[in-house]
Image (tube, rainbow, N blue to C red; front, side):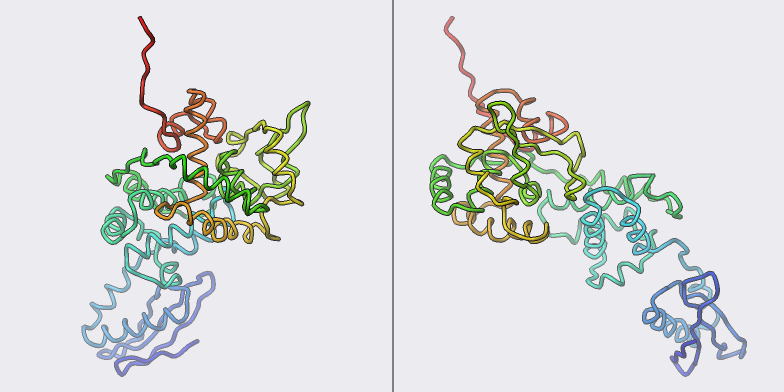
Length: 364
């Protein structure tokens, strides 16, 4: 038991068998009757603070205040749901989804303490919370949509929630889907030819990992995660061509966002393969995926910032440029979709490619 005092009253916090939540007992100031109530909290420090509030309000307002506190939310907490999701889900982006959920709730309620966010009941996730998030969030429209989509993704797979008492979150899922946020999906502006030429020359001078990361994004259209995981062994000699195999590799802890549907095989020119094969093992430095991904986000992006000072997601800019160039060269969206690893051609057309809008008519 733990003693707690407030407004001249003394109570005790204790746990009962079968319940992880702290219970409060104290004597009513007017009738001297022993009162018991659940705080609804698992964290002792937070339960003490709530117990003080309960006793202080009961001392001022009588049993009516106690009845209001007794009408607590019995649903599981956001933290318990997040822990269950991280344990059961097999989605590669599950940790990112949980982090976005915490950040979305914190932005909506203007809370910075993650433990307090974790202690909130799941019924906090509703339409009003999404509306508060959209009101308080100062991010770009696409970032808002990403955060809401990732938060919704936590609760989308039914198989992840077997054995967990999940409340009805239909309202929350619908609110995160129908936000009214308008985003210009064709906002990518091709990189000027002179800038691309300068980057090509400077990357050759830099050599090493800088050159390989540049080629993987600019020529092979790979994402930063794929670059951080890419190894020399991914390039195989088949016949008279070198093939770059971007496939699921569970033994290397490498998974793709949409699984086998995103796997692809890229045939490399000999000159490009020769430069990539100069790597000892991984294409970029680092003993762990975190270190290699951090190198891409910091070192490589810092190098690219010299040439693209007003752009964001610089490695992605090179990937989009690669897709645009291939589309302009071939005119086949399906080919570019396979090159970039998209599951549908509509994704390629909306997000990653900018095609020359000029139409040249032949002579009559």
